[in-house]
Image: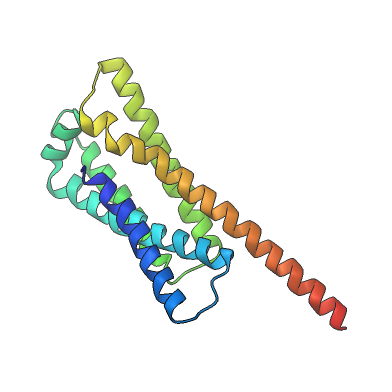
Length: 176
C-alpha cells in the first residue's frame, strides 16, 4: 500500500474509534455528531499530521521525493511545497482547538492546494508523459478524493448545524 493512503485511512480509523468509545459510553450519537467527528478526524489526522509528514519529506528528503514524482531533483519548488504542507499541517492540527469558520477556511485552503496539485500532476502527465507513481498514482487520487470528502462533510455539517439553530430558535419563539 502506498504511504499516501495511510493518513486518510488513519483519519477514518480514528473517527471510528471515537464513535465506538462514544457509543459504548452511552453518549447520544446524532448524524450531526457523526459527521462532525469524521470531519474533525480528517482535518487533524489526514490534513494536519499528513501534511506535516509531507512537509518533512519535501524538506529533508527532497531528492527522493522529486524522483518519486518524476521531477528533477534540486529544484527550490521542494522547499516551497514543504512550507505549504507545513502551513496546512499546522492549520489541520489547530482545527482540534479552533472550530467554526476556521474549519471552513482550512477545508477551502487544503482543497485548493490539493486540486491545484492534481491539475499540475495531470498536466505533467500529458505534457511530459510522466507516469511515475508519485505523479499519477495514489497522490493524484488523494489530491482529488480528500477535497471531495472534506467539502462534502463540511457542507453536510453546516447544513445540519443551520437546521439545529433554526429548530432552537423556533423552540425559543414558542416558549415566549
